[in-house]
Image (cartoon, rainbow, N blue to C red; front, side):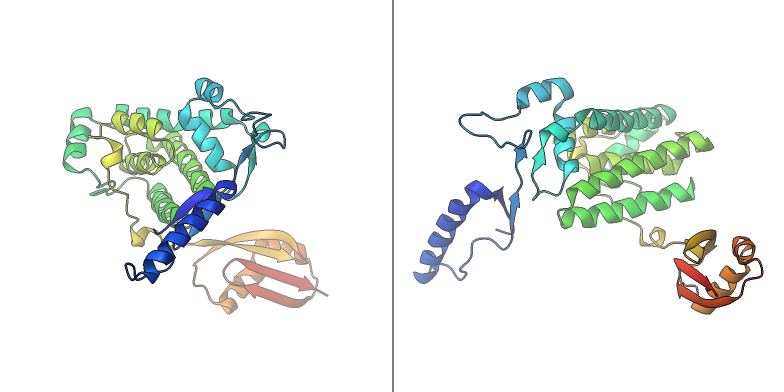
Length: 303
């Protein structure tokens, strides 16, 4: 197996048994390997007010009651977002209401995009292009397209490294960026907005499958989102046109510059020294040193 996931309390003997049998079969010449798993993750526990479940205390958390109140998607997201898989979480500190609100925002986004699009045309694309999220997209809000594809790229890598809580955070950021693009004037019919909404539905389906199915249907895509292929990031949209360089004078931020990612240190130094905020802060003081960490930071030291 490529991966074994189990709670630390129960996994110990499971691992012992499996390793024992694999090694016996290897020694008998029936296998060519001596370990049953190539990677192990011990998942954390859900505790409540510092106490874990036991025969005397019970489960500590009534899962059925939580599911009835908040829904299975919100409870699953609450657990995933709370911490890395290996850490314990204390349910007394959890707030499923926040995930209910997030899922509502994702659902309303899909509803708005679906309503703004030609229903027949969107459905036809869905039937013919399952697994082709974003195929043929041109035009639309360029800033949102870059955010969408960077999110796809980062979420893909985060899932591969089992940093699921950070992946969920990136999906939240994508929802916020898409809504901001709609409200800033692009509208829900913008091609980049639809691309973002479709990519969001597919990625969200790993964590909140019921909500994702509703979103997929609202977008006019067919059939199930579970059959949609994982979206692919366009490498051309992953490169940054510019980055924000912070200019400090004696450790205090005095200006910000938008510069190319590959800017040379000498050029960045000249721009930072000529920046209006820098000039006001210096006010005739002599510059003793300029520390440049291109392209993100310039710190000017007076003396």
